[in-house]
Image (cartoon, rainbow, N blue to C red):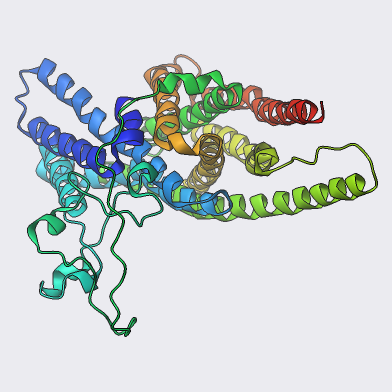
Length: 451
């Protein structure tokens, strides 16, 4: 919540690099932590999560900066594949490292990989025409630039420290790029606008976003779907190993069991982006026809709202109305998965159902995440941090009890996932409530305009 909100005011790159540095250093500390100091292990794990979890909110803020509504679904689909695909790939890598090099190698791996990401961001380079004297390798170092509109506008404002990347700082940057083969004109380009001398740091309370009932309700629904998804991945090793003892005999093989749900997440992220943008365009065409009919009635002398604009666009319907359709498959796959494990059917069946769970889960969660950013695009990181708060809290509650209630002495795997399916059934009508709230809000606005 803190880093996400701060990134909406001081810039994305500065907070990104800070979070990745925290992640890298704490992972190194965990790798070196003595096993006798459990308190230190717990403390470093908590500090580690402050760096890793914050980057998810920052990424959503960047997507909000560089996209418009009609294309945001595809970008969010690709972006969300990382945070949601990683928990499926991570156990494969972690299982292989732990089985061969020991558990400490997992934290060395995290420290090195996050350190590389940290260096890639601070070494972001300008376009090749700005660096004619640098080695050719440096010309391809072009990673995350600053995207916060308050700092760079539409991208034309030249950044300054601390938003300027390291390569800008160590090299002499000409005021205007020299002509290239793509722009042979010898006339110099106009100088870039200078950045503002300072940024007014007046942070908004991110919790005030939750006063919007549409946002708070859809975040609660999204958190439920996320918690059910994590309940499946959390119980995968503890349910697969006793059900299929001849197939899952070591940590590496258990890790491979996560690939199915991970593949579903990857495919679902691509499908979600396409579906969201397609649905946005389809709803938009209907909305335009309605506006044209209103203009026709106005020309005929009827009293209508002639001040309708983009704020009148039914964004709830465009983003959310397909969610109940995908929830049918999500709930059905969870129910079938639980009973397949309970009855120990052929391993291919639960793996296919895992794929469906992963695919539909990310479609539903992407639609929800894109919707809340659409409502407050100027606070993309803040609202995504609220999303993470809901998801993490409810996910932690579910994960803390799922292995207990899924044990054969309590409910068992079949009835446990049946219970989770019932929870999803109860929560699905929240989507229709949010759509109804949005429509009523626009009707009230039309009434004010007419009076």
